[in-house]
Length: 374
Image 1: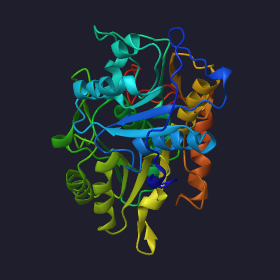
Image 2 (image 1 turned 135 degrees about the vertical axis):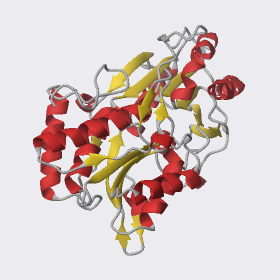
Image 3 (image 1 turned 120 degrees about the vertical axis):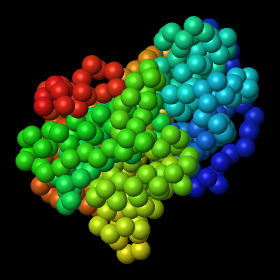
Image 4 (image 1 turned 45 degrees about the horizontal axis):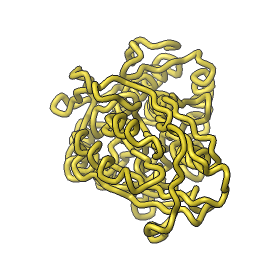
């Protein structure tokens, strides 16, 4: 982890300044401390992936503003109602609450009833009491074009596989996870068509995912972000099918997939959300081929700075390559991709950035077999 959890600060004296709906007067006192909470899924802020990257954005802010504090709150079930209740239970105690995951979409009513508190919502847009997507002046909600990063992972897998069989392993079929899946599949198909790659995507029917609309999206879904044992089972089953590269977007459950890969021969994984190269260490070798990136930490830190200086503004934002919020690890010290593969990914990703290529996503009305630019 970029910063040891031991720097976690206990609650310190902080003055909550109240003004109009969704705005603060921190701009009047640049030294004002923020009391911050981060509410996460059961895998917690040390999951080495999604939650941890959001937490690191807060830690970066605190490094520059040491009077501010952060308290991690782990919602133990992953249930959407429980997630919203976890936020309601603490809302009176904090200036800013960072909510990590699709399961926190229902915080809209809490935000409306607590205009003096600012919220940063990651991977979802807030909904009102009727379940309708709504924008609030005190909620900056960010979703990402995960399909763009997944697209890079798919090209990497298709070009580097030795067996010709690749797969994507996910946690729960939330939109962000399905975006990764469809993006990966799009990348594989693009490499097969445009770079003469020899690769097929392996899916285990017994682990097919069901998205938030109830649609079967296929793939390989563990069903949770915090079950390493099942992650290992799924990983081993795919390896037994001949898969030698797996893109893993499964939070802490993905650690089990990593273990399966480490116990096999010639199997690699692609990390997700953050650079997971260190997690790939396996004796004197490393199983991490590269990592698909979703730049959450810098965007969380930016919003905390906006709260502090009084420029915070509610928005439902969609972040992607055009704001350098998606991508992959190409540093030769942190990946094991060939120069030729990196060149081809960069060539294709430039077209993603320009809009010439638009990979399939959960709800963009395209499929991995039929997307813009294929």
